[in-house]
Every structure is written in structure tokens, then in C-alpha cells.
Length: 343
Image 1 (cartoon, one colour):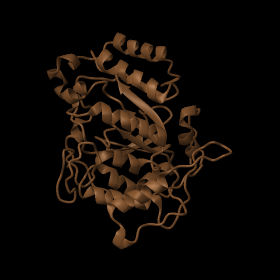
Image 2 (cartoon, rainbow, N blue to C red):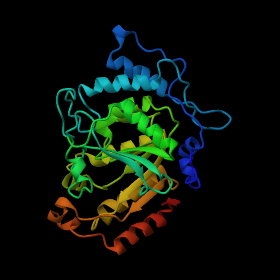
Image 3 (spheres, rainbow, N blue to C red):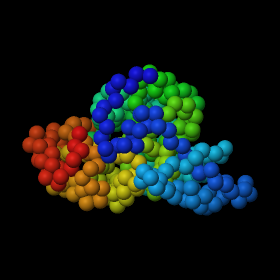
Image 4 (cartoon, one colour):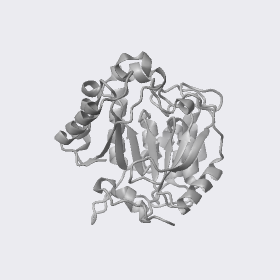
């Protein structure tokens, strides 16, 4: 396998780079005892999940230890829980509670469909070449969405059986991909499908969750122990902006909670797209919160790629391109706060 493109490690991404070097992590404790069939209720499965998810530290290294694989793995248990949740879906914080086998919620997703999959060279340099899998459908409705053609058209794309996609991921890994990168739209509605695919992988490969971070707490618990690197999209510093521009209620509480959970669970790169006229209400509060809650070593990508697409022209504040000075103010503010890993 050609891995000459691996970049110099960033200390905050130790787990990700360890997997690139071939260190394997597995999913479950050897003491795992699944509930008897008659007692395998959702409540009992969550109780078992919570027992397993309690991580312990290696006394000599201080590193969090991963559990040992068994015949019925932690990942199997996660899939069973996800299958149950699929019948009254609460994968995202909208909590539609519909049976996804029969109905569709806000995201519009029933069967997971893939718009495209390829080796992406445009992601952060520590990730490329990244095997990026774009799903259709999304939990947001951003008026300036760059992927509107797939995010608002969940019936587009094609269905690929999990075993077939797993083989494709393995083949891409053999040809040089550094990771598999689940994105969209948003991967959240496809959580069950993604877990089933991951279970079938043969290659040891870092799993990247590239998301708007509006997952439910339950979904975050299912991702814990599976995802190696969270590639987050931290958009807004206020609930008002999120509701007006992306139709998202309670954005701040949900997304900040999920960033804390992800920070404890795996490596993280936080993306923040600077919006025109949104430095004071969004960019500065987002950076302030990150510094206070996650520290200055977290990896941050402050992005200047905003374009006034689709419905953005109908919103005076974001109806133009970002000024260079606005972007530079965001960078200077982050530097003033002392962030050490701006990429």
C-alpha cells in the first residue's frame, strides 16, 4: 500500500496517525454478555452498552484502552440498538420518531443512497487522499448549501449493499486512501447503514465522521468507539442564526454538547466557515467556546470558501462573498486566543 502521502503527525491527532501506522483497535470487552433474547429490550441493550463503554486507562501509558473483540462484539450491539432506533428514528436531534422502514422524516432518507464516492484530494492535508462517500439527504436546510443537489434530494443517488461498499472501501485503502470519510448531505440519517458497512471491513482504516454535528445523544453514544476522527462543521454562534439560515432549532445546546462528547471519544478537526457579516454573532463566540471548553490544542480549520449560493441572495447579510478582511479578522482572533493547530 502506498502511504507516502502521510503528513507529519499533529499531536492532537495521535489516534488517527496511530491507525495509519497500522495499530489496530477493536470494539468490545471480553466480558460482554448480551441479554437473553426474551430480555433483549432497547433498555437492556443500552444498559449493556453503557457498561461496555466505560473506558479505562493503561497505567503505564495513560492511554485509553480499547476493549477486546469477542464473538458478539460491541459493534454488533451498537447495530442492534441502531436497528431498534430506526423503527422510531431519533438519530438526529429533530427526533422525528417515525418508523424509517415505512416513512421518512425531515431528512427525507429511508434507504441510504450514495451520490458519489471517490478519492478526495481537497480535504485537510492530513486526510488526503481521503476516500469520501457522499450520502444524499440532510438534517439541515441551509439556504447557502454547496451540496444542495444531494442534500435536498434524498431519493437521488444509488443504493449500494453494505458488503459491496465495504469491499470498495477495502480496495481504495489498498490503493492508497488514508481514511474513509462519511459525509453528505450529512451522514447522520445513514448511521445504521454506516455501522453495518464498518462491521464488514477487512482493512484497518481510520473512520472519519464528517458532519454538521446535530446528532442526538443516543447517536453520539453509538458512534463512540467506532469513529476515529470527527470532522465537525461548527457553523453558528447563536440559535437565531441557525434557525434563520438552516432551519435548526436549539442549535447551540446540541452542537456544543456533541463537540464535548466527540472530544472525549476520539480525535477531532473542527471546521468553521466564516460567513459575511457574522464575525461577532458566530465566528467569535464559536472560537471563544472552543478555547474555553476544548482548549488551544484542538485542530481548527477556519474556512474562507463561502459563496452566496441558492437562497443566500434572499438574505441581506449573506448575499455577498466574504471580504478578505473579514477572514483575516477571524484568523487574527483565533491567534489571539492562542490556538496552536490552525490548518
